[in-house]
Length: 319
Image 1 (spheres, rainbow, N blue to C red):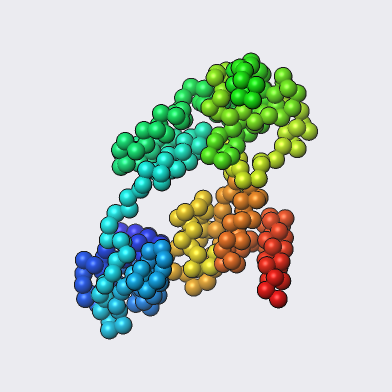
Image 2: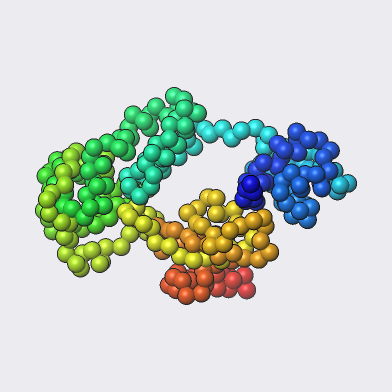
């Protein structure tokens, strides 16, 4: 039974320990083991040769000798050891996973298993965050998520720090947003008569009402996700992008799926469907790849125009 070939990123991550355990192995044998041809393996080794530790001076880069037809590893740059998260790095991951749980648009069991593994791996370093950040499956948060998903109005008790008071409100949910590592309910507040953001950890209680969420049409239409935020309710919007072969690693780090089955390294660009939280994020994302990731013509024309304008302005400064 055949299995799908690993992506290039997965292959590169596995290569250093593979060759370290097989000093002097011939390229032809290694290519067969790794499921690629010798030409592709040589390209992979050339890529590894310019990877390494921050500083990226010659002594910081992975040292692999393969010009003689056999492969020898001189310096691993730490690639022979399992990745170990610092407490700060683990905390960031835990917070991000909890925000995904707040969205209610992911496999909650899978997210909880991932959180448990991270917490077990780093031990007590997560205690401060665990103590100050409410659990994402707490009843109040669940009530908010369920009301957004079902389109129901909510009765909430909310703490307003600027006035140091707790008020009872009835709100009509619009969406859930993630802003600066916090989850917010965006809703029409019937008490205030306007759209407000309610931070999850300041909602003392939330009870769905037996009536639909009905924000004024103009409020829901005018309410756009804030710059730097992600809309977490329901399915994220999608866009089709072209990805050059050297940037295919992004498929493993972002919510993107190739439209064709990848079997080894493609000869040219591939098209993938990318999920994104806001147009501002999408614009920054595309700019960061310097042209190796592009919108398919006809997709998100406003973002394409913004990226083109920014690139043109950058080129003009060099003149």
